[in-house]
Image 1 (cartoon, rainbow, N blue to C red):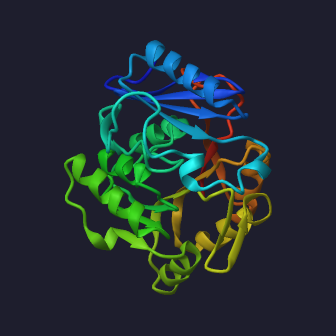
Image 2 (image 1 turned 90 degrees about the vertical axis):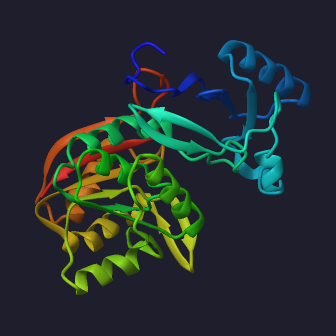
Image 3 (image 1 turned 180 degrees about the vertical axis):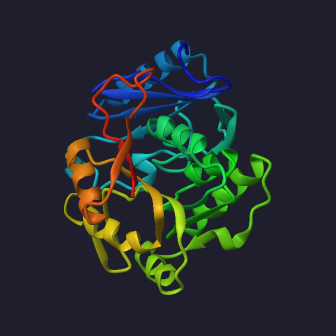
Length: 295
């Protein structure tokens, strides 16, 4: 697609209110944001295959009114088999030369959030010589971007060992030897307290929490708890360090996110940059937003 970073074969082909199409090399992922009949799903999937040139099309049902989804199984929401073409267990894609493993049949999340591309590129361009902490790391896209940018270390934390193992595989895919000590399975609040107790600090902290979470009996809601999370990480952010605060909640705008993050840092922060989803392939108002703040 014209305007994409060089050496990139993962992008959004269609970005509409009713459905989106993400292309991962030879695989397309069709996400539906309103109910479709089975016939219409098949017809649209066939059109996606033709338009994208992809050999397999996977379907994800993501209606914005979620009351009808609660009774459905994960397999109904995100069928593990493609609607069009042969099954693909994994496909390797490139984003500006960085390599990531995509698993198209892996539920709603296939391994890489395309709307954070510009934020990952910023991390890659601002990590040389830095020690980086990647919170709620998922498959470690930000951590890998930091290493590719010359970071001395990138520590990734997520509750799920499964996605951290995936992140280790991605790290190796990019030519680095993963160190299990840098892929920590656990609660981010708990680990921030541990780091603070040991006076361990980081030059760049990437914060990309889920919009909502109720893990291990702890509730987190970005609209109300984001500032508290930033306050919890502030002791591990080195003097003169940078926070990249990210959020994917549609109802939390860029300006409120910036205010919450600055307040969490005690008001002592300078805005360096702000990001949404790339305008190259995202046309709808972006749910993802990020702001880089220097203490």
